[in-house]
Image 1: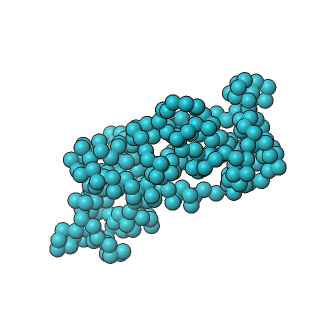
Image 2: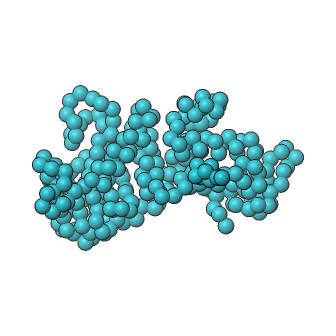
Image 3: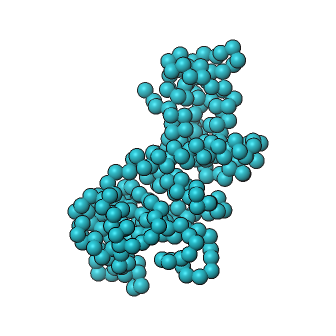
Length: 261
């Protein structure tokens, strides 16, 4: 009997056995004199040993195993694992940006601060942390962007670019959202009183749930530099938006540029 877990990773079986081209999906492959696997259709070739190693690293990336730990488990140089991880995150960053259309319908808006625990003020105005603005179309997709500040003009610019006019917006009572009524219906939740309005049942629980999801994933890495943080954030955004799909298969496609015929 095939288990759910084994079938989940079975998409790489023909690749790792040298039966299917990882670049174009063709089954017309042959071995070269130096024991590489070469495709008759796209004419690209690759060492089967290297291919299997990269597929294992991609599996570790899918399972959210930190690079240093995976390198130890696979007995590889950490730089080898980090190169694959970095390339994947770059692919995910650009793919997430290309996929991001303009959200519509019921949209929750919120900002979040990412960074380790520090003394001083928490929440809005916290020092030394990365500020992220998020827009979430309920039951669909989320879009995130690292921003410099939470001024009303800056927030409105992002909202105008990434949402359709006439949508229904849900926010907390932050004054930066006061002019949202110009773009559509605006519902506010006063978090100093409750997280769900008792009368209207308005809330922003979906976007706040995404922040918790993102911080839980980032916690595994024990600290991310500000330079690399946007790529980690887009990786999490991609994982969330494709949560119903086989992400291991998607990561293979993105890494190798594979496009199934």
